[in-house]
Structure formats: C-alpha cells, structure tokens
Image (tube, rainbow, N blue to C red; front, side):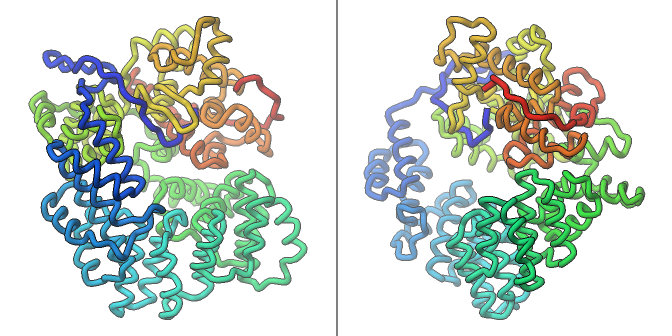
Length: 635
C-alpha cells in the first residue's frame, strides 16, 4: 500500500482498442510484439544507467537498424559523460558526439535531456563560454545543479554577488539536489561578499538536518550548533531538555536557529513542545535562517497546537519561494487571519487559490461558501482525437510503455503535450483513454487551465468489476476510486519497491490476511495480479481499516498507506478534537501527508463526476478526537 516510486512488471498485451467503437480495452495497452532488438535495447538502457561505457558501446553496435536511433545514440554517449557514481566527468572526450547529437535531434525531448547532461559536464569543467551558449537552449531547466553552475558562471563574469546570493537561496531549497555545483557556489559567494558566513551556514545546516553532514560542512563550514542538529535528529525530546539548560551559552542567532531545528524535529514526532520551541525561536527572530523544512514545520506545529498567532508569523517569515510553492500556506494564512478577526483579508487570500482544483482549492471554496462540483465539460470531436494518433511523441510513448519503459514513455508523451491548448490536451487525454493508458489520461487532463473534462481527470475504468465489490461491503465507491487514482493511476501491473502490486497496491502479506478473513480459501499470491482479485482484496482491506479506525476516512486513508498502527499513534498524540484538514497537514510522513490529501480531494470530485452532486470535502475530513492507540491485528 505504500505509494513509493512504482516500477511496472512486464505487461500482458491483449487486444487493441476497438477501432470501430473507440472504446478502451480496460487498462490494456495496444498490442506490440517484443523483439530481440527490443530486448537488446532494454539491456543497453540498463548499461547506460550504470554508466558502463564498454557494455553500452557493444550493445549499441548491435542495434544499427533499430527504429529509435536517437535513444541508441543517447545511451551510447551518456555513459561517457559520467563516472560509475553518476558524477559528471570533466575529462570526457565525447564533446563532438554530443554536438552532433544535439544538431541531429534538435527540438526533441531527448536532445533536451542530452543538453542537461552536457551542461553538468561543462559546469564541472568550468567551460563557461560554452555553458552560457548552451544553457538558454535547455528547455525544461529543472536541474538544481545546472542552476548553481549558471550562477557560478555569472559570478565569474562579475555579476553583483549580492543579487546572485538571493538567486542561490531561491534555488537551493532541497539539500538532496545540491550536488557539487551548489557546494562550490556558496563558498564562492561568501568569498565574493555576496553572502554572509551565517547565511552559508544556514544552507549547510539544511543539509545537516537531512543527515548530509559532509555536504553541510562543504557549504557552510563548521556549524556551532552542528551537535544540536545531530541530537535533534536522533532524540528531539532530549535535545529540547538539554538546550533548555544550555541555551544561554550561545549567541542570540544560534539560540534562534537551534530552537528552530529542535522545533522541527519535535513537530515531526508530534511532540507538543514543538510549539514552545518555535515560540522561543520566533521571539529571537532569524526566520530567514531556518531551512525549508524548518519553516514548513513551524506552521504545522502551530496548527497542531491551534496556535494561530504562530501560524501567521511562521507563514509571514517564510522565504517567498517556499510560501508560493504550496497553496497550503495561502490557505492556512487566510485561516490565521480569520482567527484574528480579519475576515476581509482572510477572504482576499482564499480568493487567491479558490480557482484551483486541489485539496486546498476545495477547502478555500467551501470557506467562501461556494460549491465543490466538477466544472462544465468541454467536448472534443472524434476528428480532434484522431489527430492525436499521428503525433510522434504519443506513438513512441505507447511503444515504450509496451516495452515496460515508463520513464522514456512519459518523457516522449509529456514533451508532446508542450504548448497544447486545453482542447488539444483533452483530445490527447481521450486518445490515451481509447488506447487504455489511464495514467496518461489523468496526467494529460490534469493540465488544462480553462476548459476541462473531469470524467478524464477522474476516470472510472474497471467499474463493472469494482462497483459490485464496493456495493457488497458498503464501501464508498468514490473514495475507492480516489485511492486507486493515487495508488496506481490505474496501471494494472504497477508494483512498488516494497512489493505492493496491482491497481490497489496490495502487499502480499496483507492479501493473504484479507483472503483468509473473507473466505477466499484457495488464494495464492500469484493471483494478486488478477484485476478482480486485486480489487476484491484491496477494497475489503480498505473497508477493514475504516471500521478499525471508527469510520474516519482521513485515518483510514493514512492507514492504507502507512499502516493502522501509525494512524492510531498519530491520533493518540492529539491533545483535543482536531479538524481533519489540520490532522492531514500535520501527518509526519511526507508521502502519507500528500497521499491522504490527494485521496480525499480525489474522492470529492469522483462523487461529483459519478453522481452530479455538490460535495463537501470538509465533511469527508470530519473532526478527529484523541483516542488511546489500541492494538490491531490488521497488517
């Protein structure tokens, strides 16, 4: 049930769509025969992932007539650019090959990927003239290291280092992606006078909070509160007690950031002292020196404690990029304003996100007294849909999906979507539906801005199978669909890194438990890939956790993802009855927090699509009261 990165088992290829009716074959992809060339190509891809130059060269030489010559060339060249650890090589001799590739395949998704790779090499080499010539051509521009190299280049050219330091802080939000480029950039900015040593230490500390201690030292040097960071990571309650006794030994600034770090890790443990730690930090100031995680968990600590003053101050003290990237902070800022009695300003902020169709957009509309129903449906013609069948990105994407290469399939499919109008996106989504690629249906329809078709955003494949199962156990069908949309995106053969599989991502151990409970006595785990079996076991388990958690959809959704014991533990740590939206936002696991919000937002729209009724997300979220965590036999 854990919604981790999915890998896809080898698909079973059944009949193609019915060309007369245009109806999809439920979740099946078009029939493609896997050839020996395809198998060699897949081996080549794996060699390229390992940066195994010799193996990639040998396999590429055996694919001289393979239809996807761009990928063969890319997989041959790419290992020459990186070492076995995935670090860019400054001494590569592949420049001429890269340039030839970029010229030959100009404007393609794969050329953009190659340019991304080469920019890392050029940055590592400090070849700023060539880097600056290539960087503006990088369409996606989604690589933190490349951005850090771009800032290094500007610094070399004499651009104001203070301005570059501001840009660096806006780029360096997630330490997992700092890499060598960002580790070089920060000390260079300090040396140039654009960034203070304490600002550099704050960026390094963000890495230290995630356990990247070497990266932390390279960016910020020795941190006077490094031991406190380490202590807070391992035992925040002890760190809180110890620092309460020793805080006066530190400067005002270091006291503030230490309390912020301790508050963050207390909040992640749902410890009520998190509110006090953050209040001490707030009194001392230095909000700008808190990490992204520290700033976000300051809000959550305030929400959990119903401390609306802290919530408001925390959001006001956020880095502007952090504040803008998630509508959660706009919503909770509005709620904090309302709690202070400033209804007009609260309404103004709710209006900012009321046109969004996500979790917080739905809550904002309800707070404004507006209904949460699916928008009017925009229709597309058969001719518009049929035009999509000739799009090269879709043709290639479908072929890659058939070969179990979803990463490559998604790359080509999504590249084809660039620049499309809303109606074209809906036509592409409908085309994906007709060939049974339901994850592409959702992904594509989700992109529309003004014209929509929520039957495509929230499709209901397998309804003939799922409806009678849900009806038999009185399980809410919209909720079940909301969960499947989040778990597998309707990819029938989806499997997670921990062994969950199928539409409802059922774990083998869970499947055996449920099968025994419902009298499926002949069940064996090789049946879990069967659609009806997977839906039966997953639906029954979802109903079991719902009953075990007193009918709370929030708690049951969290339990389906992270396990019933964790859901009960999080509830037990409440100090008083808490609205479901606050409970969801303060779930300690990033994955589960996102999962619960998405499942319940999905369920609201599914109900609207299936029944045409206005739905209340707040009603689904409910109020969650504290309750001692009792043991459960559910896996």
